[in-house]
Length: 571
Image (tube, rainbow, N blue to C red; front, side, top):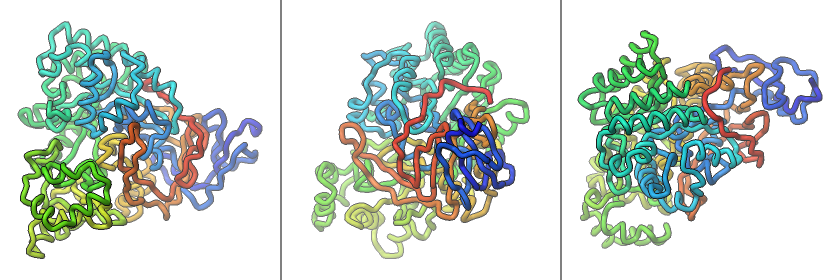
């Protein structure tokens, strides 16, 4: 056996992903699998000294949007920088397959509006070597990368493929439409789709302001699609909804009927909205009731507020919709800051309505009472008295004046942090209560999406730093379980997420005391010179995918062992 060992991670503290107590041991890898745990006598072709470090399974993220980036990029940052070794994409009902050539622009417009990925980036980056979902998976398979990826079949793409303009107009699907969607779904699952995703929220719009084609899909359509997963023999349903048609219980009952009839599992996004502060509790209880009845309908929750970063370097700021800012929006950062420092320009811009000319679909859900200076190092749990509204009241200024001055701090590189959900009480009590429910899945980091104003793909690092090390709210083994075996199990990935013999050799070697966030920054590394927010992490000594070291101390090794994972698999 010794001659076959490709890697040995020695002397580490094993946190195995099951929730069990840590223990010290070596881990030997051969053929991309863990082959031995204990005191390894033989040498590996490569060795990592993990003395004093944690050794965990690679993290599994089931809510990402790398559908485009996985086509053009071999490095799926920022997720790969935060210990993620497997990502499931295609969430929220949006994606790029199936798609006829005539409909490509429709899907690009929808992805641009829903997930804030600029159209020029997609036009240049997507090679469109596919029409069917199976052909899209084959295109993914041809691109080597640093992590494994799997894909959900997106409802918007399927609906447009089957119904054309009728889908855009939100017409009800006919029996023939539903039969066609069922057949497409069954074929996609057989080809390797992890399941099916859909959106029922008015927050999901194209850049033109059109609601997602799936918004008003009826129960018979969703049931038909779920039956397609049943026909294919695998897959889970992922859904995001406003839960207000007419109330959470009614919408959840519909989802439950779909799950009962199809026999498939489901996950749904759960957040606390600032305009409906308590409905999440009802949904959490309903999912618990379903679990007790033997139905898996699990909420996916964020471990902190989902926050928008508003800044001159990002795609949005509080004044993006004003005529004055639009006139300078294309200037280099330094020139914009110089223009904004002019007192007359400032007076004029502050006299204009920032909402009337805005194309930002979330503009109506943000306000100065929940805007804060982000700072460096970043502050994700700001105090109520530090809000822009509170500062303005103390200083006798208007809130827009305070926000304006914050934006041009630090040469325009400062951000204003705006918690969109989960921060009604200005503390972490809501994320804590959601995470306390073991039926809840940690997720919603949205890696690959919202590239200009949301940067939450570092949720795994937040779990380690805030909830484990700083707060001590959960023991480290439980935190690691939530990042590994729990998410892997929810996705149907029984071959990973645990350090055990025979399991896939996806590992992280972590300097627990040193784990931290870097300051968010903007870089123009997307196709067509597109800009995006990124955030590095400290403390990840090594990340291993299929037994190959992909990152050392946060820097890519150049190895690209990541593969397309075709569908769910047993342990």
